[in-house]
Length: 224
Image 1 (spheres, rainbow, N blue to C red):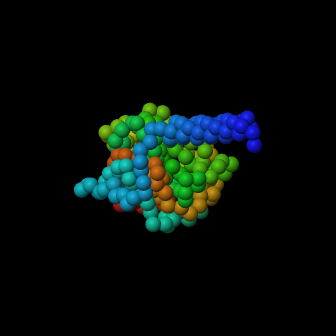
Image 2 (cartoon, rainbow, N blue to C red; image 1 turned 30 degrees about the vertical axis):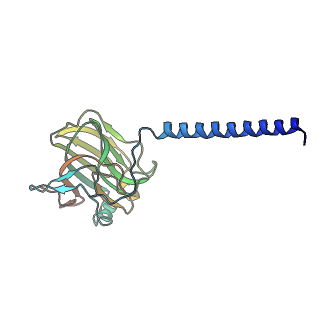
Image 3 (cartoon, rainbow, N blue to C red; image 1 turned 120 degrees about the vertical axis):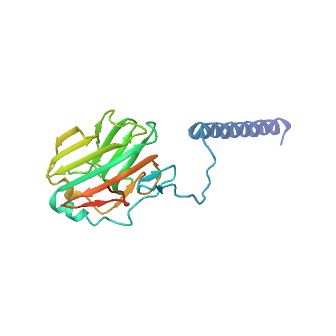
């Protein structure tokens, strides 16, 4: 092999190496940009930060696990009667959060109802025929939630008549499909997070009750 050929092969090899190094550097830069800001968070045991106060209310932090052990017994009655009343009293720690306070769901993609804080807005998802499995789009009541004080939510659904009251005032009334509750499916009640975690709401809940008949069923012991 002549000297000229060897030089050409070396030059070509050097070009390939430079190209690969540049490509690797570009990939690393894009990865940093995609994940910044980031913090090392390896798998580990974490402590459930849901605690009960002396008055019976539940306090929620950054790691919340407050879920029913299975499908609530009242679900079949709600499906059959087409009637449900949900009462919630919550005290948000801050307005800078967009997380669920209470829900009935089987996973992240299938929720029968969700009551969520969206900064100062109250957001309610209600699964019903003609919509997706999460009940999108949500009902939104603007600017009704306040930090560091108790906010009451009273949701009533009776065979198509939907009414949501916030802090004793009418926030929303609407007509939806009368058989909406018939599409609800088995799931778990969760307070202060998704049923499978990952969206912790911070604050305090002192009342969470479901009524499908004459008696109210407390959720996680949150009752008057």
